[in-house]
Image (tube, rainbow, N blue to C red; front, side, top):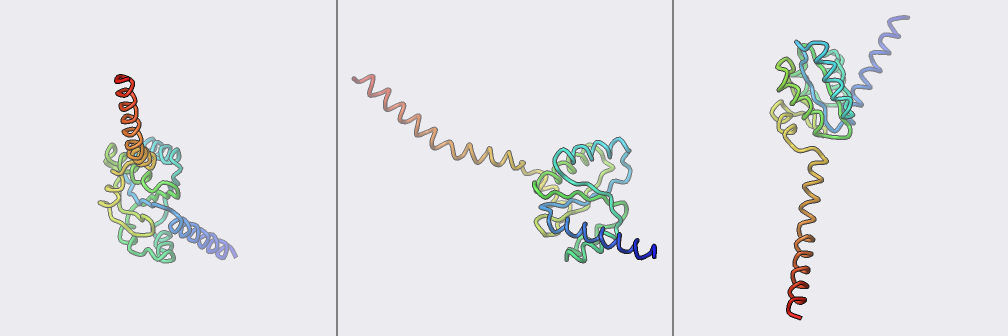
Amino acid sequence: MANAKVIQAKQEAVEAVTAKLRDSATTVVVDYRGLTVAQVTELRKQLREAGIEFQVLKNTLLRRATATAELTELDEVLTGPTAIAFSTDDAVAPAKILNDFSKKNDALKLKGGVVEGRVVGVDEVKALAELPSREGLLSMLLSVLQAPVRNFALAVKAVSEKEEQSA
């Protein structure tokens, strides 16, 4: 009877990971072998502050979840110790945080990931990490939208000052 409970628990775990794979905007898979406890704690803290879920999972469980989620291309990177970061809100944040952390700590290796339902390699995860954050992109857009209005206001002000001087 205990085996049925264990099997049920494993099936629920696979279903939960499958749901996270489907629902996340970005999922990044890393090899954390060689990190100290303090480094892993710091990494978890940074990810938690950004609203990213970080888990260490067995590769067999992940393979079953990727099969259910139809992301079997990810299976080729599921070797050795594997940790996975799920982000439902910000597509750039997990890649950015993990890439920056891997630059400071050589032990953390990016393996690949899933972006918007598509399996991507390490190079694409790093390219995603180089993008500005959502807030940065919005501020760039806002400054571009404000420029014509600002220029128009300056032109109106210049015309009014010229008319005041001639009067």
